[in-house]
Image (tube, rainbow, N blue to C red; front, side, top):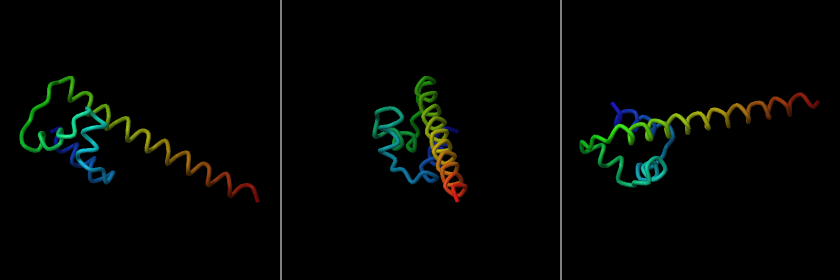
Length: 77
């Protein structure tokens, strides 16, 4: 269910609901509306799921880059 995925994302990334809505669909009320039963159109749901996937991929890539940089600094000795 979409609202569960969104709630999990918000907890994992410590992101306010309104910020998520603005970033994902330019609608700060999105999460509130989902919580109260709104069923988004298929295209909107795809945008939301795409935002979540892209954000998490970006977080993973940033973590990998930071880890590689730290390892590179240790090899300089």
